[in-house]
Length: 69
Length: 430
Image 1 (cartoon, chains in turn brown, purple):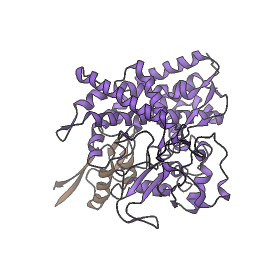
Image 2: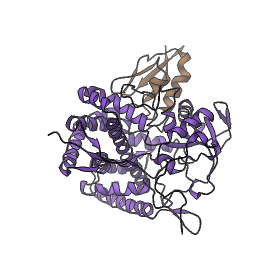
Image 3: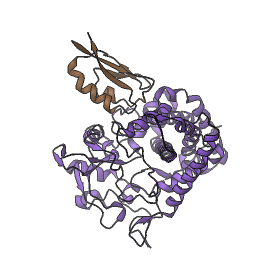
């Protein structure tokens, strides 16, 4: 059984806010607009949306991996 | 050579959009953008939101038809689906780039992955939100110096030249490692490329701008000179960093580096400059809102977002369909050009209530002034936001009752929808 693991790298973030807009259940942005992963182990149903967020992140600051549980 | 018809004349009032057949609307006509484009954009959005815009047959610069998108949701959809709508086939509407022919000047904007991703990863390190936050004191110091210099002029002056343009040029010039004494050249060159008021058609039917050609040549020659200096003596600047950088084990060629500088210099100054000027104008025309910002400078951050939305100084970019697809209900064929009108998306009433109203309390998080999302989203957004916030904090603290002192004038451009003349009196209070 594998689960999803979402990582947002605040050091790469350019605060475009797209991830939070696309997947508000997984990503948020702090006062400076920097990515905050609010749900690092989301339901697999979110995988496709998260993958899209990873692809379009202009700073390539997001990643999605599968965890062995 | 002949002078280009209808392109280089002084602006006139645009025909009221209501009475014009849709097919007669010409979004490539700079006169539309030099007056008020919004009635026309509103009409397109209401009547034909995915509109087939014929090529301008009388105009060799705009010889290709395209889909004109004016709805917010369509602009963001196309932006966020680079697999369906690519950038590698160009991002501009003009089929000839005046004077740019020898160089791939906008290489970074006009690339798809993997090259775009590599270059982007390299360059964006210098522009991350956390990096930019650390630059606030430095940007504030530059802003204060520029305001001091302008205040010393006294009387009326062009706010664009004396203030809006100066801060971003110093910031991007310093970042790139261009010596201060040479930085005015950056403005001269980029101005020549953006305000194309001298276009003529040569005997081959190709549009030419002597000043744009000269500017590109001079700029690339200068950049090569800087590369030679940095190769011998690397510094902490972006030029040195690009020279040292490797992507997948390979160095960027000098030419690729120069193309990247070109984008950074252009994108790093025109846009912030134009949004500053737009905000100065908007606040002068809305003195009640300006007063609120003076009384509560904490509101400036969100006011900047409204300036970005309301001004939208890059009016559009283009994509090309990579396959047969649809936008809304409209079938789009592979190879079709698709143009995202950010200016229209930012005034879409479906997204923004009473969209033509300038309202600092709106906090329009959905605006697309930095692009509609996706991999080409403006990498300078955090830097631009910071410069704009600091500019208005300093300006309003010091000159809360400046006045517009004459008519404003926009760039002769359908792409860079910026103000080039903004006569202002600062009305110094101390």
